[in-house]
Length: 76
Image 1 (spheres, rainbow, N blue to C red):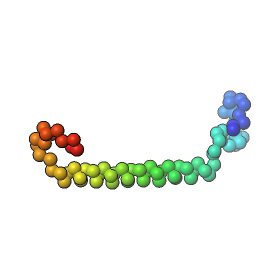
Image 2: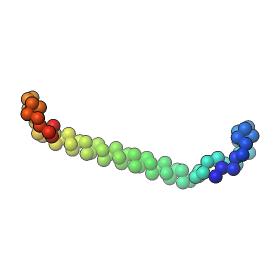
Image 3: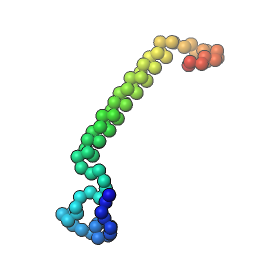
Image 4: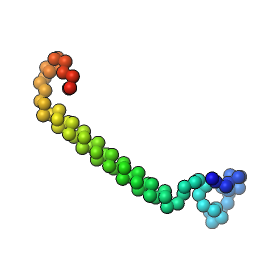
């Protein structure tokens, strides 16, 4: 937990007198979590792009005709 009891005094202190971050979990774990989040974010985009490309290729192979929508095709 943060040990700040008076924010006005804390914020008016010079930067060299502030004793560190005022929120829990600050430190080297933050950097690791950011790196992990970036890896997950990029991985999600790669997997999503791959699955959408496969789906679009599958639909393109079907070669629907101009009037196929009139036949109530459910897998359009």
